[in-house]
Amino acid sequence: MRLFTTTALTAMIAFTGAAMADGHSKLPLKELPGIADRDHWVPGEVNADGALEAMQAVVGAEAVPFSGTQDKPIQIALIYPSSDTSDFWARNYLAMTKRLDQLGIKYETTEFASRQVEHSLQSTYTNQVVLDKDIYDYVVFGPSELAVQADNISKLASEEALTTYVWAFHTPLKDLTAQPDAWFDFSSAAGALTMCDYMLGRLGEGVTMAMNRGIPGITDNQRSGDFKACVEEKGNWTTVYEHYGEYQREGGFAGTSLILQSYPEATVIHNANTAMAMGSVEAQVSVGKEKEVFSTGWGGTGLELDAIRRGELDATPMRMGDDVGAATAEAIKADMEERAGELPFVFLGRITVAHDQMSAEEIDSLEKEAFRFSGVGALKR
Image 1: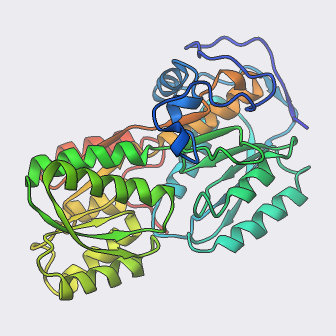
Image 2: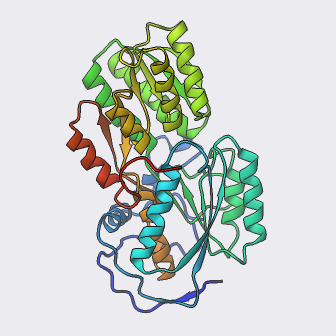
Image 3: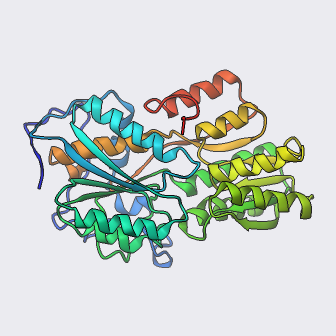
């Protein structure tokens, strides 16, 4: 049951798109090449024309206050792997709450933290939130891995009392018994291709590479698989070893230690997230090899940017990180103003490449924009 009422809306930017009267049952809105071969939809198949661009414009602009009134604060449950090294979760929590403050929306949050490998713990949290569904209005769910958590997403989404948002994925699975209300992410596939173009331009052809991959699934298929396919096809690169480090710092350390010992011909080490990148550079520094290997991260978190400044990490596809949290706050506002049907089903943030050839001023400028809500510099944990 909603805890607020609304008045007439005066919007700074008019969203495009139309509500589907029966939820998401009419997806996809259009079909793009390869749809029959995928178990998921891509954003272009589920977003109404112009809806994403309009939402991105709203997120990047000054906040327009909520037009309604509230009897009491909304209740938001967050289930996500925020106990891991990556500060993606903490930053977007800060971005969401600070944007809600700017919007004038009263709220209270309850966090259910886990590590990315603790799949069953997320199931426990899901069951707890469903059991307490009368308490909560919104659920933000950051899956440990999409396929593993598909049933939990459906379970949350099927509860009419809850508005469910998924963080860190942008590939809605076709066979979910119930779709969440919206997905918020950065396109790992687009980021992989952006990174591929950068790496080919910087390092050229015929490079020998090794990889610290994450957990088998959509995210790693895009971050690692799409990158690998791109550099091998366009640059004739060779991949000599692929280590699955489960997105953990220890996995990045172990994988890199093995690469340095057994595959010294690899001059590039690709890491699929912040935690593994930090473990990778730690392993290199421990044996004095950090200047001999070109190392990449993923996401452009504060920890990665600090490692670039220290000369330990060379490049990373950098998300304008706070976009996801800010967009979630705007989606809550739209839902409270009964405009949810105007939102994109999948929101995507921007990605560029941060690297060690940038000036300090250039990195600082990127960081300031990316972390305009959560703050510049590594978060204290």
